[in-house]
Image (tube, rainbow over all chains, first blue to last red; front, top):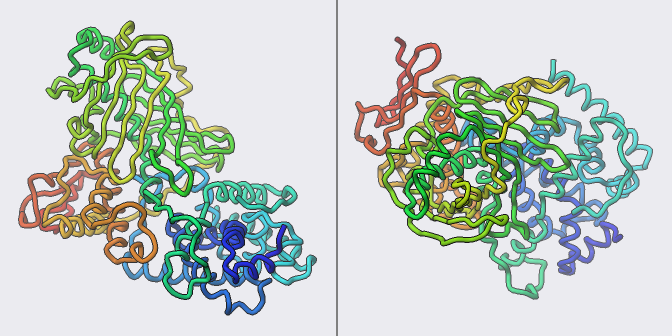
Length: 173
Length: 412
């Protein structure tokens, strides 16, 4: 399997397969991030798509190819927050999702319940938890991706899960 | 699909997140979309010209998703519509078919709904099972993936239940006491006088010879959008055995009822509203806790935007359906196919998407509240004193939107 660093270098040369692989590698965590902020799966996909496109068009500005993932996720988060701000300026009424025409599928409901809590985690913890559980990365891959020691990643994961549990319990009270 | 392998997580929360992540991965396929966008960029693109011509994605998955999500409503429409259809057909023993259907006590069918076009290389679809028993009890089972089946049990005169086995939650489903498409009303069958547009001939289905008919859905219910209904009636039993409803507005979709079994004894437990043990009651949505003023504001905003696009006329229907009205607005706004990139960021497009909230709210009120009335065919923005939309709340208050979009809450 090619490393992110290798893929980014290939992407800089316009290799389509490398770009597609990078998108496949990060799309889950990226969409989940945007979804958690925006509360809309489809809008989240659009924001993620735009973030990927902008990232690839600005790839030369990336200092270290290794950090593509964190660079992208930061961009997704920023773009989603901007979009959210724009939405709030345009409307203050929430869509009656589950009760009317847009009854989402069950997995989406489950996701929509957990995501807002997930994105409330501290950024570093959100990063490792989304890469680990949503993207399916191994701890070693996350360590490589984020440039943190494996022990640090493991601790951050444990802390994130504990914090997430506390937040869910608090919400259910 | 993600290429990474990882060890299985231990805790429930980790497992749930992992499972959700996996499902999300199955639903996503952004790589081609990203490549298309990069190809489309006329400057600063890092990509060389594509080796093959770009494929134009034919439909927008947002609308597709909405289409799939109205399966329960459409499911009800499709089969009951056959009752009307066979009344209109000339070449079968009408009297016998009609009588058979009128006397039916139940039916069950396998249901599938899928697009006729690909979205990012896939044809999104849902499959499920549908049960109906007289007078108007419905159970809809929908496969959620991962072996879970979502269940909705809906009654006309009392609350039902929605059960989500993945989340282990349930929700109370409001009674569907309000307006619905005329094709869902058995008692109105005799009101219709249309004839089937096309005889489809005969064919064998599961060894039984059947006669087929086709009709435009708009001739049955002008509010229900464009499409056709194809019905095949078994010559021996004189009952429908296969129904296909083609929805041909922005997202071409087909819904198929097959393996229809009439008058089998449905176990009472199929319609039980007792939640499974250890399932939690889902919190009511934020929407249901909105004030009447907020709900009215959402609806009037949608109506105003629609009239602006439609030459000063509100939706020209008797019943508001969220997806149908949104599709009409997109058509009026000049949006076709995939709406992405700059077009998706247009204010007008955002307005149309936001308006769907209003249509959804109106549809919810109309289907759940027997007092709800919409008069868009007769009332326009100039009719300041005429009621455009109204309904009565349980506390006796009547909420009104007038033609000029003033609103009022009338206390008895």
